[in-house]
Image (cartoon, rainbow, N blue to C red; front, top):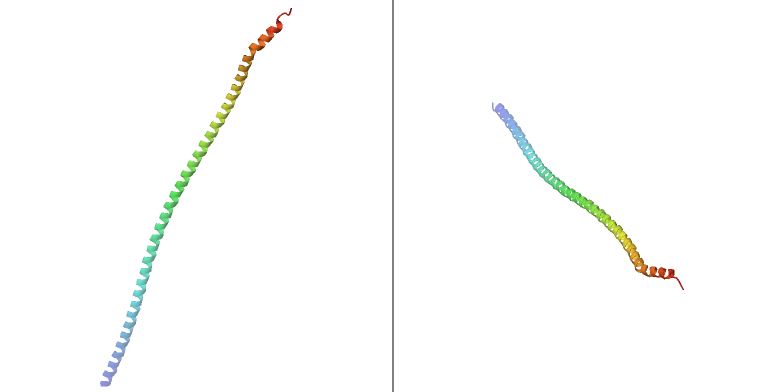
Length: 135
């Protein structure tokens, strides 16, 4: 009986050893899987943080682009206003120069008339003197 007991005991011991080895292997695999899972979770958290930062950077870049676009529109509007004012001023100066030229021509004409009127009495007296009978 001892042999059977001994064989049975050896079988049980062998089986127990196999189960302990299997348990140990499974615990090691579980530990490795848990470690991989934790590493993956950390990677996911890092990726989510990176995505959040990138989204923030995109929003900030869009805000800056909007501000720059608005500033550009304002500058373009100011430029158009300045061009319009310049054209108005040039037109005004052109009209003023034309008016000045007309005024100068009129002044010149009036000066000629005044000069003529000043010498008219002298001319008239010469004409009367010429019509006097010479005896």
